[in-house]
Length: 264
Image (cartoon, rainbow, N blue to C red; front, side, top):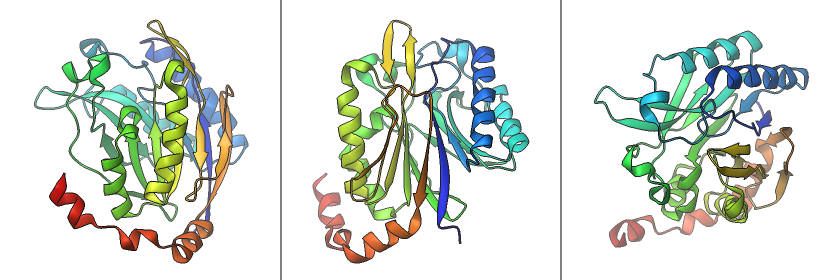
């Protein structure tokens, strides 16, 4: 079993709705990640478009070009990739989705954003997801959130019962509320008792400004990485630390999940 995994965090300055330019940017990130021997690269929400409601312009089917691009890139560089996109489902609804691609180019799984951001009218265009997948890679169990999902402690409670090793949060979280993003990342690491990796974007998209601020927290809330304005950063995750902490401070054994279910 692998005890460590090397993670590359990419805070892209996403070109608004320009998939081809953003693909070139992602290729450049993978070059740097490979030089640093990263096992996995994590990109922000809606990686090739920015946070966009123009679903008819940007949405793709499951087998669309964005997914094929990242599968090919992962295989070429022998590096796993997590990215976000907009997908059109067979029932003609649209979802804000995260994909995890293995280093051999195969799709390991997907997660649909559960909480569309009604403040920005995301719920007028996107359907919320209903599943919470766990994906195993290199001996680590991954769970996921997308941006606004991070605000909901109830989702963290569900994840705490599933006990993932790493919770990945991809986002387009604006500068005006960046302090919320960072406080919530730390809180969720404590709630779930897992590593939490929050990956935000840089730059400007459709008049909204983003200042990065991606962070990584340990299962006991220690800040392991703060990217600030760096476009690319790296962190190593150690599973032994996680297992030791859960063994020495098993507070989730006292969680009253049946009570929570009855009163929600």
